[in-house]
Amino acid sequence: MPAPLLQSIAKGDPTAVSQCIDEYGGTIYALANRYLKYLGEDVEDAVQEVFVEIWRSASRYNPTLGSEAAFIATIAHRRLTDRQRRAQIRRTAPLEGIPTVAQQTEHRIPDHAGLRDDLRAAAVAFESLDKDEQQVLWYSLYQGFTHERIAAAIQIPVGTVKTRIRRGLMRLRELLSPVSQIKEVAR
Image (cartoon, rainbow, N blue to C red; front, top):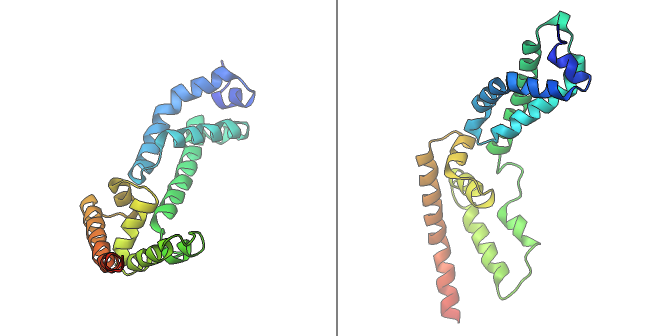
């Protein structure tokens, strides 16, 4: 009778790793897809992370305490839950603890032909938007998220994301248009 897969992996048998992937890969992929896809996370990376952890933990497997499938499922569940939590934390608090736009631009942009004044005006305009509009614009403009990824991150419909972005950009244009008109008159 061949040794259990995890014991073979712990002994360094490369064929056992392939067998483990063949046997449990589909199940772990399905779990990762269910845990992470709605967050816009890379499911393949998560599956790879789970198998690396299985490889590292294989020596801890004790067949008297349960089946290999249960041991592997426990590792998968823990890794995927951890990754899910990290993704949710990254995506739900983009504006808390992040310096304001004005603070970010204050010391990094040299004063070239009024550029600093324009950036300050844009920062003030951005900060006068509703928090909901700031949040979706932050994700879109500064993080490069798609509408779908923003919707998943803050758990609102995609249509609402699009509306908030459009409304926020229109409001920014309104707020900044007097500044651009004054500059043109001054030239």
